[in-house]
Length: 335
Ligand SMILES: [Zn+2]
Image (tube, rainbow, N blue to C red; front, side, top):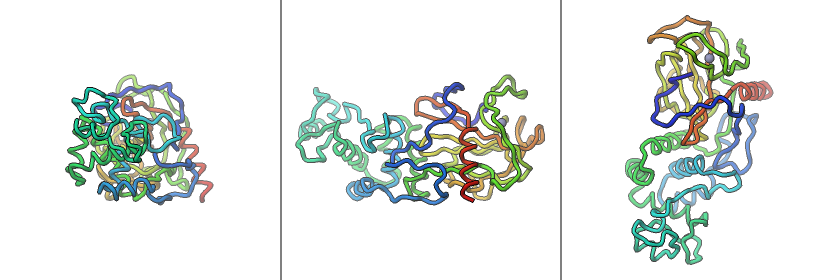
């Protein structure tokens, strides 16, 4: 659905991308956790390297986790290595005025004001060493202060993009409130014991608001049926949207964006900035939308459920139907 949120990030919607993406990919899970593991509740402690780095730098573990997660989402090539996804540009590593952008001498780097350090004691500050990179980066970030405000300022200096800093802060809230970095649990967005029905309607045409393509799955259910958050996430947008009516947009640390539309109302305590967990009630099925604020009843009550993936550079919608089927079966099996 268009206008599903307002953002300055470049938005490219590819309708032909694979129907299902790998929902197990994350910066922290050494072993992938399947969607039919029991929900909810954090399942693993904070990774040791994050705790150690937190002690060493004074940064909160969830700030480290959030920054690392951002870097991982943008720069990961595969899941084989958990720490070496951090990208530090030449001039930051070796120093702005250093004529040698590939400088590895920690003393010379220091003279030129670069951030590169030798963490593993081999006498060289190497951008190919995971220890050197990780320690250099987080020491630099902690240097000007570890409070929320100070860290925000330093992140803005480094990334030079407020949208990136906002995204990192959303991750931080998710990690902090979930008290875990292991957030790979999913449920079906309607309680499976309720009456509902849905089929694959990806790409269907629709009648209202000009020629648009259906980007999501409609789950038909009676008015007032609870709508559940499918996973851990941050409520990025909430309120009226002329197509979606009363809607909620939820971001995950894996840069998935879940869009729930046509609600009759929101659950208590659900607002922009709330961190939710799998199975948490966020609102109720309705038929709001297709008009000015408060419009309702132009179509049968249903939940419009959309999924979007954001790589940091591109954003696209993909068909949620295969995942919905999987989560539904997993929840039924657990009961
Ligand atoms: Zn729909």
